[in-house]
Image (cartoon, rainbow, N blue to C red; front, side):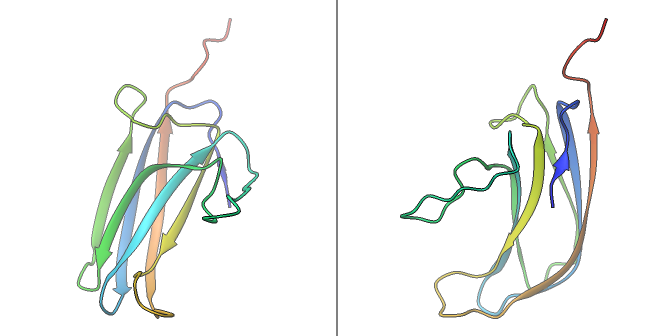
Length: 117
């Protein structure tokens, strides 16, 4: 699912995590941005070609909290493109790791990119 933020330049994400189960590791939440909904992958690494990580956070099994992630146009290393999506990844380095997370992400976007006359 993609959030269309074409008219915005700043975004604040409130990640409310109530439960994480990640034996032997963490669950990483990625918030990614791209100019298109297309998701072509690099044939060698399977990494997304268009989507760039805007913000991310890794949480362990003991975590239950709200994390605030900010991507402001004036300070972001990756600027906000038109579309925003989330992705979660479990522990790596283990064959077929079993993990889960209960969370919700609230997005607050502001600031028009263009001045309309």
